[in-house]
Image 1: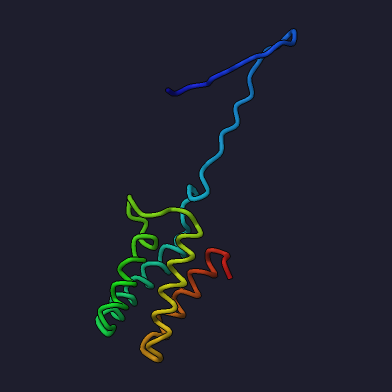
Image 2 (image 1 turned 30 degrees about the vertical axis):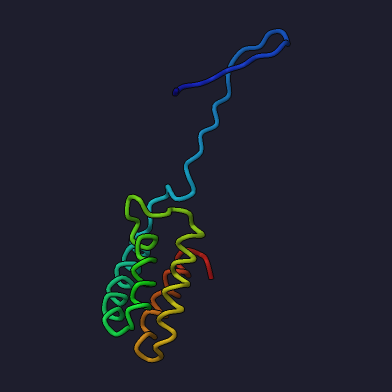
Length: 115
């Protein structure tokens, strides 16, 4: 069912209707700078993935949908934040090799206003 559903209980002279429409929290388009930062992060994740043990690579794979915005991916900002922190955590465990990924995650978090 779509459209307005109006119920009026009592009163006199009732007229008009107030419609409140809100965009979803994730509806605002990402800035070009944010899109570029995410592209850079994804490239770095791809490079890092080959240097990780299989279990850690799976953790990265599990978190990619929240970062790439795939159609069936979780869209809540907290899910994206959780995925970014998980990626940074995996990258931090591999020391020098993971530093570029950790820095890229910091940049994305900064652009999202989460740091």
